Length: 172
Image 1 (cartoon, rainbow, N blue to C red):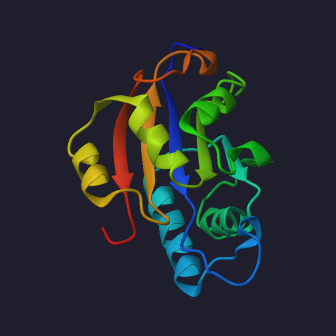
Image 2: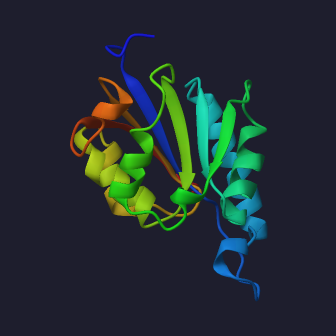
């Protein structure tokens, strides 16, 4: 694949988590979260975006979100569970994305706020249509996702180089 072809990143926040007496990393999804994860998976599959790679936080709620969402896809992408996504800042997430092999055209990053929303804001130098307005008016609730596009290699990904193409949240 040529590095001149546009690349896409789907930033996907985990679905609604429960609050049992466990450490934060081991919090499971709430019942609503399980439903929203499947709906988000259907919405993402409906975009027709072929995903080559999924990078998923190792936290239980993100793994459960991805397991439910990916069942809605016609093709299951390779999934890598990555500890560095948990509690990562936008800068740390960019550094992780910079490690992506150039044969990957589109990836989904399943993670947490405030990192996911911050990354969407930091990367998006341009906005397509009303996606930015909808994202900023809604915030980045559980099970929301944003689709971002940029040109160049993964190593060239940096603040402001991408375009926010789309945004979806469960209540839309």
